[in-house]
Structures are given as C-alpha cells and as structure tokens.
Length: 68
Image 1 (cartoon, rainbow, N blue to C red):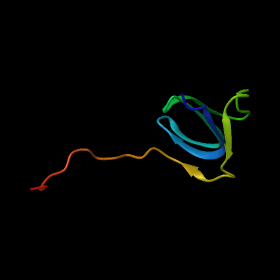
Image 2: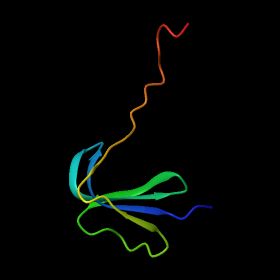
Image 3: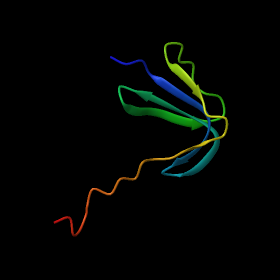
Image 4: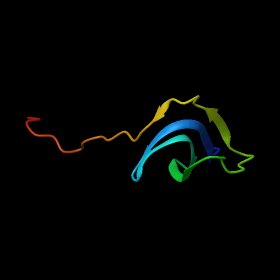
C-alpha cells in the first residue's frame, strides 16, 4: 500500500469555497482530510509543499455527445 501524501501551503478549491494556506491529506488514493491553518501530524506521509500553488479537483466530464 502506498504511503499517505500530505499537500501543504496550497490555494485549495473545495466544495465550500477557496481556502488559502490550506492542506490536503490523501490516503489510499482518496482524500482523507483537508483544512486550513496548521496541517495534521502525519509522520508517515510524504509531505509536498506547494508554496501557494492552486490545488483543484480534476472536473472530468464523463458525458460526451457526438463521439461516433
């Protein structure tokens, strides 16, 4: 199983609006937690500093017209 990943210092676009200086924790390929201010203690997680970069959902549209 892959290590958890903790993204820190992101400009995060979440369902309830944008969050600056936020963090996002991914475990087993899924978002486990997110928030702003101080990130959680996750000593086994790979920590990735985004330095204020935007972190947003992929928003893939699975519905396509005219494919064939």
